[in-house]
Every structure is written in C-alpha cells, then in structure tokens.
Image (cartoon, rainbow, N blue to C red; front, side, top):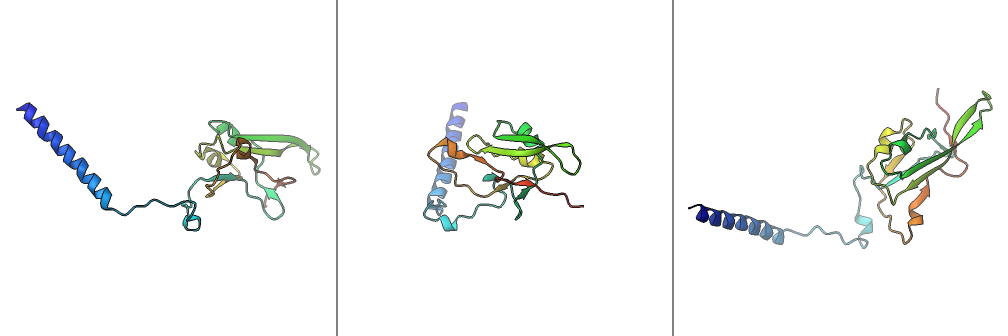
Length: 154
C-alpha cells in the first residue's frame, strides 16, 4: 500500500511540474534585447548602480573626510585620503579631504557607506553600465580636483 501511495504521489508531483512548464511556454517572453533597446531601459529609482559624490556649481562637496564610510565598508572598496590644513579663520589644523577613491570592481552594492555617512556626502545613481576591458578603469576618484568642503548654513 505504501509503495502504491509513493508512485501516485510521484506522478502527482510530475504533473504539477509539467503544468508549470506548460504555463511558461505560453506566457509572453520578458527578455530585453540589450543593448539594442538602450533607450527603453529605465532602472528603478532605488537601484544601486554607481556611487557618486555630488558637487554644487562652486565645486563644493559635503564630505568632511571623517572616514566612517571607509570603516564600515565590508571589503575595502572605499579609501578616504585626507590631509591637514590650517584654518585661516581660527588658526587651527583641520582635516580636509584630499582624495576619495572608489573601486566599483570590488563593491558589493550593500549601501552601508551611504547609510552610515553623517553628512550625506555620497549617494547612488542608476547608472548600471560598468563593462570595461581593464580593472584600472573600475577605480575612480569621486571628489573633483580642487573641490572644497561646502560651508555650513547657519
């Protein structure tokens, strides 16, 4: 009796699988013909495509070079290089961002860096085209040359 029950149960599971297969055969395909349809592809606004550091018209950014994003990055994708400069107003030494290096080749897109940044200095774009022939092109500097820290609004 137990043997007959297992055979019937096996046939039932086979029929369920075949039913799902038949449904997928008659459904319309959703395959996108990329890159031919590049103009029609619009990723979701919450997609994590590429990390950027926004700058305003005066070439100013919000990064204070605190290094919290670098400390929280699970695989060392971010490297914050800072230097000490003397503040002319107070005469004290102040840490200033020199280079903000980002390696998209080792990034796992976990968004811990953007969530942990107290200044909201970095954010994600929906740019998803990162194909290159050499790994060096996957490493970039996010802060622009000559950029400065944005003044706090009082």
